[in-house]
Amino acid sequence: MVKNIPFYETLDLTLCGNMGRVHRLCREAVTIAVEPLGLTQSRWTALMHINMLKEGVTQLALSQSLGIEMPSLTRTLKQLEEQSLIVRRVDEHDKRSKKLYFTEQGRSILHTLNERITDIKAQLYNGFSHAQLDAMAYGLVKMEENALNCIKSQTKAKNDT
Amino acid sequence: MVKNIPFYETLDLTLCGNMGRVHRLCREAVTIAVEPLGLTQSRWTALMHINMLKEGVTQLALSQSLGIEMPSLTRTLKQLEEQSLIVRRVDEHDKRSKKLYFTEQGRSILHTLNERITDIKAQLYNGFSHAQLDAMAYGLVKMEENALNCIKSQTKAKNDT
DNA sequence: CTTAATTAGTTAGCAGGCTAACTATAATAT
DNA sequence: ATATTATAGTTAGCCTGCTAACTAATTAAG
Image (cartoon, rainbow over all chains, first blue to last red; front, top):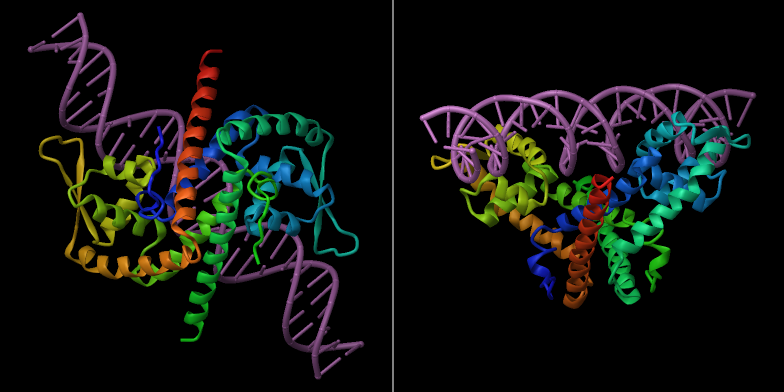
């Protein structure tokens, strides 16, 4: 029974609080669905992105794709390696970097994982038009830009002191 | 240089990852601005909501307004009390619940806090039309509903087993 | 009235973001 | 050739969400 809720009644007052909550809820919805596979949010997200970027991707590239910092990723990959779903191999051409590959077991759960995520995604986007989804995605990208600029200008102002 | 980014290139692949990242960045932008006041994100958000709901609000009502669970709030309020910015007083009519009040010191930083947040908000929403912001807010509410339904139906399916 | 169920709040501990400080390798400058 | 700087990854530890299990007070049932 959602009507045309004026922006200032929702997003504005709590600033970005709503975004955080919706994010947590969407995340939870998927996590419930893939829990039987022994995966948490950070782990299934990482698996999906490795698959998307193709095996052999470096940790740095993966962290950028995920939009998280290296230390956050390191922990997740460690867990995935302990679960024997992936392996990390040092790149022979640049011994600083490590490339990521699925194990047999890791590759074998990809299909089920993909299926379940697609299912949940359909439920989350239920009732949205393509135009609406595009508008949201565009808004998010724009707000991300604004936030980055805002952070940058503040950091700069501090250093100039 | 953001063009008309097709939804499936952004929000879809990472599902709700973008929302999480934008949320973190917006949060960071404000936090930098209010750090000199000795406040973190959870603390300034709580202060703003207490002010909005008026002093004397219960912890339960505050947690619902913030969209977080009680234990998350308990910790934050404990810190605010240790900073002597608020006090918690047992409600005489229902000794289970506690009501929240600002201290002198707490009330005195509200003005500065409000000012800085308003400033950052303007930067984050820079370039957005009212219609765009409303569309995003509406989309978030709708997706939250979808997520809640999705979680509920999954939980129910599990219990029926 | 006494007992059972519900409710507000707390504590303990997990999940997954983050920064700061570190190691080891590679690239650049002198 | 050597010394400096930059880069990929790790470790340690903070912040703030969460659930599960608890206490104490209130409400509902028998």
